[in-house]
Length: 97
Image (cartoon, rainbow, N blue to C red):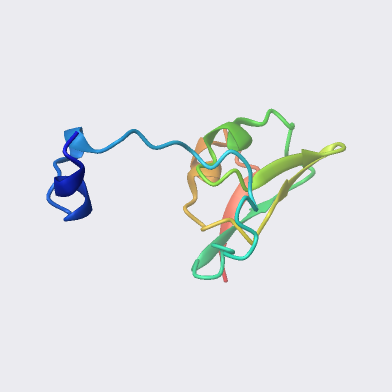
């Protein structure tokens, strides 16, 4: 990898280093990332089977299982809707902020 090209913004996508997923929300507490979303996911706790498919697919690791319920950390949820799309039983609805 040519670091000079990378820092100048000239590097092709194949030359860029591999990046990872955020391992857990709040890894940078000072920079909450959920304040610009237009829609937020809301979990119907009666419908939810706690399969954790939403947790697996959340790119921001903003979903967690607390005791017997699934909770969304709105400080870090960007409102992408992937969790709602992946929920096989439709227990997550995207609502306008």
